Image (cartoon, rainbow, N blue to C red):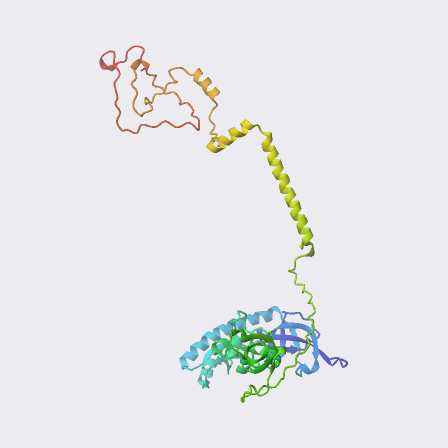
Length: 454
């Protein structure tokens, strides 16, 4: 501790990463946030986590005597901590079974096993007092160590169990709050909140702790605005306040007079509450409003949040007009080039292309590898005349052609001519029976004449 500044160097540590944060003497160790350390407490040695590294605080904030940090956690310390956590899970299951066996009206919340292993602490919640002496004896016989049962409230239960509040964030009591501050219904009324218990209560069933966060600001703002229903004087006359907006510091007033036009909104500094309210005898109310000259509002400098558009991307009116002119010139130049290209083509070619486009004849046909007409003619010329005839014997109508025996080709069938991909395929005769005629035979047994095919 330095005598000049009256400060002391400490390190902030939390146990089981919840509850209150305690100050310890670093004892010459340079610790970082998140380090595991073994410290000396009133209960003995405990393993904690560093929340804030070495820093100085006023000496009056530290509770004397300041206990030191024994050492940084080793592998053996971490192994012992893991064994304690495993033992806690087993003790929790056994504790619930024993409570059910003794038929006690209590809810087991959590179990803690000391770092040295000489004590097991059971936390429970209950609506009233519970006689758990027989339960303690039963648990001590099972674990063969010191047993302690501690009753906690619903707020401490919510802190130990954890969860998400109605705001969608983790419980304040389980994250950063060290102590529970008193909260009353008057705070909700001051902040113009609904007094419905379901809307201003937390998961623990008590009033939400966050009601206290803005209470001081609301108390200061409420002093500058009249209450709802007060009789006030405005620049346009007298009236009653019907609505108050504390945050915006304005009120809605119903002026004396018929019609809906009598409802107007004024700033809090433009109205004044009349002492004693509206006079009963119908006399003229006193003049209490003193208008103060309003100061001109200074232009606020925009806060740099990183989302503003860069200045080089912001275009002035002249730059925008110049960009539009350039865009029009480019589009005009492209249009003139397309017109010149069309005019350069002959008129006959343009008319023929237009007719083909309208008739759809200019669509490209698929090339399936069909031979060219010249090549096909050459192949037909090389083949014998007998092989070039088709032997399917069907005409276009699907019937069978009548052929003479001498016109028949040999039994070997000639390969079919390749067809163009665009040509229609011949229709196949799907009739089941054919009118077959036997060829005229030259002698008995149906032997073919000389010159006929075999």
